[in-house]
Image (cartoon, rainbow, N blue to C red):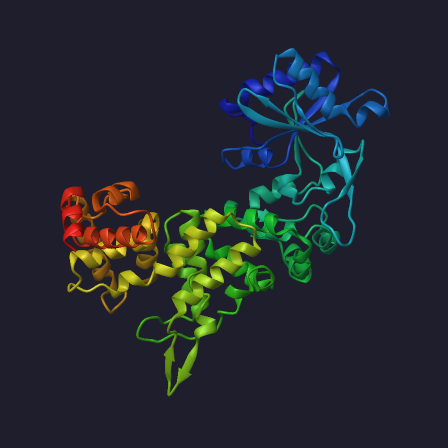
Length: 461
């Protein structure tokens, strides 16, 4: 067995826990993904400590909570945050959040993935209520011994396999908590592990149960998937087990939707996943890449062997907004992602006939999402035979040239309403906004205009 070495970042925390446990007659274990990561040379996080006491049963349910209080008092830490329903607490130690739990088993209602918990004095019951064997390893801190209670966790780590803790009950495990289906997909991607056959089949059987999971939980798993390398692999698995159609039907329906051979050789679904992998690791850019063609389904027209997706960028923006609202993303996230999707076609329209004014209009339209829009255009159309990649390079060079000359952006709010009223000797009214619009238009044509030059022009008009 590999020697366990606690990372320096957590060494003093573990030392404090070991000392306090010995002084107060507790048994403590590091549990969950933290232990798994120690075996695969992956930087661990989310330090969870399971606490057992040798006292009477009334104290056993509160073991984690009581231990965290003793620890906080001993080392002058802030009071732990307590979750009485689950018998858990969280404590900040040396700037790290540590969760303290008791051994427990769980009971599920058929219409909810949120379990009722019951204290358990059996490490085996606690191990079996966890999701996968690789996450059910316990590191006993008293002697630094790893307990592999399922007897498969260490082998599955070595063989790079994601497997439920109780294979004969795989379907029940996923039906009780269908979020584990998405977690299996995500962890297989993150760790580059394969999913064990019976586990995989049970995931497919239970995929439709994902509807009982809150949108926020699904969103959080998607976010973790999107920032991994080659996230398309996860979405292919989701599609194969009929999970994608449950959580992102707008993406699933793009399968087998053909495209003009002049531009793309893949169907829309395959193309979208390729764009996703090509996009830089940025959550907004990656989400825009995944959803940028969802509008093609709604705008698809085929006549006389000619395929048309006219207006699909606008429709894709609408679809993107609807999807992200359903998944409970923040208003800011939605606005930025929609902007990227809506404008990603514009760089392809570039020709060397564009004036500097036209480029400034484009940049103003893109706003703070300019870089992401250019990135998505590159991922979407780069290396195409029609020379789109060359056009993007030329457009980017012209943008950088104008920026270096301080002629790309206009000065915001060059003249206030009060200044306009004083200069033109007019009372407040709708004319102020109209004047500001005209000033902005003048600035787009010539960003170097001064306040005095603009006022003189307005007075003449």
